Length: 83
Image (tube, rainbow, N blue to C red; front, top):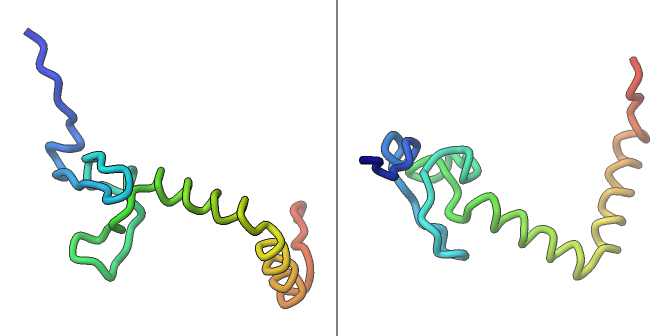
């Protein structure tokens, strides 16, 4: 007799993402860590955060490009990859 269970859900408990409505294991593999919250995890799961971030970029890529350009100017250009 095989029982289906999620070991992470048993160890860490579960948490429901308000965006997708899916109940997931309440750990840092499913949710981003956030020290300011009671359980130490963000409300929205990693998958939904990534989807929202990609949608925001697609809606206005020029804003992201400009922000990155200003960052590079402030930090002195591109860092060397090879020592």
